[in-house]
Length: 129
Image (cartoon, rainbow, N blue to C red; front, side, top):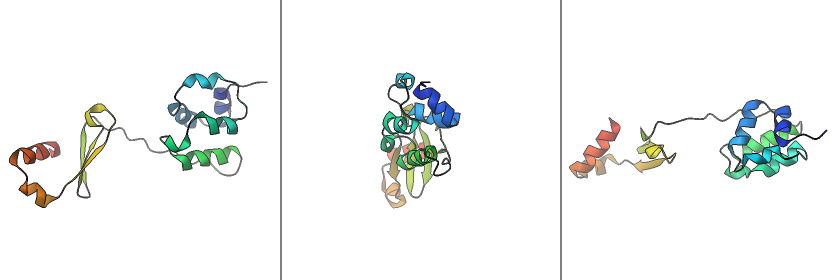
C-alpha cells in the first residue's frame, strides 16, 4: 500500500517533528507525493544545513529512523516582540527588527558611548528604556 510522504512522516515521527519538517519546506505540496522510504524522503525534502534546526538535528532524526538512536530534543523556539532590545556582553541586540525577523547587534563600548553626540546617547538610552 502506497503512502504519501506526509502519512509516512506522521506514521514514524511525533507530530512536533513533522511540524519542523513542514516549516522547512519551500513547497508543502511535495508532502502529497508517494513516499519512497521515509529515510530517502527526509534526505531530499530540504537542505539540512539551511534548516532552522541545523544539520546535526536532522542527522539525529535520520539515525532515529534507522533505529540507531533516540530522537534529539526539539530546539527551543524564541519569539521576540518587534524591535526587542537586549543588552549583554558589551553588545546591544535588536531582535526581530521592525517585525522583519532580522536580528542586529551593536558593540557597546561605554567609553565611546560617553564621547558620542547627545543625539546618539539619547537614542541608545531610549532603546534601553
